[in-house]
Each structure stands twice: as C-alpha cells, then as structure tokens.
Figure 1 (cartoon, rainbow, N blue to C red):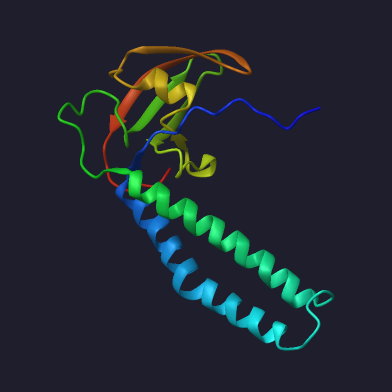
Figure 2 (tube, helix red, strand yellow; figure 1 turned 30 degrees about the vertical axis):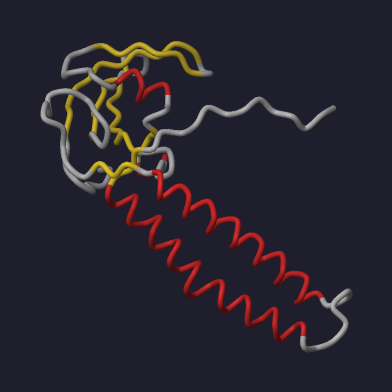
Length: 172
C-alpha cells in the first residue's frame, strides 16, 4: 500500500481580523519565546556529552523541528491571507464572517454558526469553515431562504432565520 494521496484542494485565504491576530500571536510566541527556550535546553543537553543516548538532546531537537515546521507554516499562511475586517455592503445576505441562525427542518431546532476561515474553525464556538458544505450552501442566501446540502450523514435542510455581522460576538 502506498502513501500517495491526491493533492488537497487549497484552503480559502480569507480570515477574520481576530483570527489573523491569534495566528500572528502564536507565530510571535513560537519565534520569540518558545524557540529560544528550547534552543537553550538543547545546547545545555548537548554540553552533557554523548548525544546518541541523550534523551533530552534528542527530544529537544525533535521539538525544534516541530516548532520550525509550525513557524514556516504560519509565516507562509499569514503572508497569503486576506483579512476581512468589515461587514459587506449588503448585510441582508450571508457572506464571510456572518453569524447565521438557521432552523433545522429535520430536527426542528435552531442552530447558530459563524462563517470563518479554515484556520479558525471551532465547533464548540459554532465557527464553521467557509469551505464547508454548509457554509458554501449559505453564502449569498437571505433570511427565509431554504438551504439544502449534502453531508456524510445525508441530505440536510435548513431555513435561514437571522443574519448578523457583529465582530467577535461569541456563541450564545
């Protein structure tokens, strides 16, 4: 069995201002605090002598590789991002960064989602990726529009109840 996988579809390059800020803070923390501390620990472990059986040295080097990999990813990703920091011209339609309340026709309950970039999704907060099937189905819809889309669980039907563009409002 081979490890080859077909190339993944590139993720959207949109991000909210708070998502950009969080990713940039992580990058700064890794670059200015975490990496220097791990580098110092590796230097101290290397000074102890034989590196081939020095667990602290081996673990530290592994940790440095992981930190460097994450720093490269964040640097590249942040360079390509398009920050969406203001509501659209037509706030009556669903676009990126919208809080959308929908009525689930199948289960007879209301759900609330925020459409965000793929790097900031959080199911517990109700933040869904703009690349998700639900978000793609919701984009451009207005209040009282029906949304039909397919998930691994099957066909889903929602009705748009409310659309809001409040910055950083948490899931109620």
